[in-house]
Length: 281
Ligand code: TA6
Image (cartoon, rainbow, N blue to C red; front, side):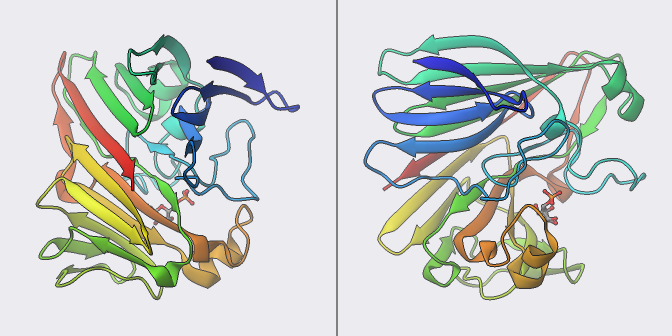
């Protein structure tokens, strides 16, 4: 079942409820901000202080970074992580699948506003399948006559029991760029987090696992060979108005991306897709 809902300030979202799970997706940003499989804990972390307001990014869930990840390369006055997460998308398809999952498709295309900050004609579709697993596919189509460069991320915030309890597997031997020190390194063991982390890993296999005590989250990706790991730690949490001071203790971002060396060029008429499937056990 799919319901169109609206907060009192007019902010619109879709609520999906089916045999397997429940999810909430904001039309602004095509932003999945809740997903919960029946009888399992919530997969996504959502800040209790998150803004659900026009033109503001939601702190938590799955922000979509497009057409650039992080700061704009040439113009730092442009919005961090691009405009997709603060722009209204359109729901173009909804379907109940045979296995009881729900497929939702949202669309964003160039407009007078986007052309002012990114001079390309494009269409982007986000396919979301809400089922026992959560799948996302971001399909970027170049409708322009010139090639464009994109860096993207599915900037997923995972809900965790405590930052001290987690480990991240699948990064061993991978090179990473540390955005805090602006230096490059190689990961040489399972990653555990005990201070601020902001890294872009170039991954070797499209499979990463987040262990949280007895809970495990599998992250299987396609069309991506980079993953961003982020936890703001205490000082930066305190500086963010849309996050509690100790919010960092219960979240970690593992972001299937096309970042840094994994930035992509999309030729006219071509499509680039980046996909991820999250499983919980
Ligand atoms: O993905 C990590 C990162 O780029 C960090 O540098 C950090 O600033 C974070 O994203 C959140 O960005 P935001 O613009 O949502 O505050």
